[in-house]
Length: 147
Image (tube, rainbow, N blue to C red):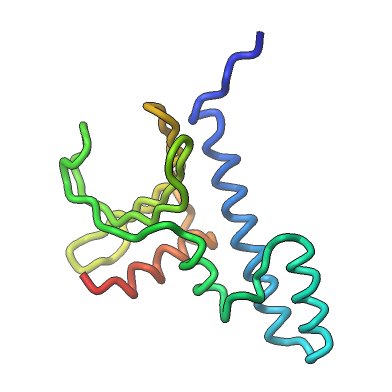
C-alpha cells in the first residue's frame, strides 16, 4: 500500500507549478501586446481552448490579482510558534491550500518570501528566489498595499 505524500514531499513541485503558471501568463501577455489584431484573436482562442482565459484580463498583474484569493497581514503570534508578522498572498484554501508569506522590515523592504503548501495539520515551505515570477508578484502586491 502506497503511503500518502506529505507536504514536504509536494511543496517544491507545487511551487514549480505556480511559477510555470505565472510564466505561461507572462508569455501570453507579452505575445498579445506585440501581436497584430489577427494574431491577438488567435492567441485569445488558443488561450480559451487551453482553459487559461488570459485574454479576460488586461495585464499579468490583473491576472495574478484576480486568481489569488486574498491579501492580508498576519500579526505576530497569530499562530502557534509564529514569532514574526508577515504579509500573505493566499492562492487557495481548504485542504490543501497554498500561499506566499512575505517578511519585511518596517519600511516594507522584503527580507524573505516563502511559498507554503498546507494540508490539514501538515505544512512545508520553500524559499522563493528573488529572480522568480512569484517574487515579482509578491513585490507588486506589497507595493500596492495601503495598510
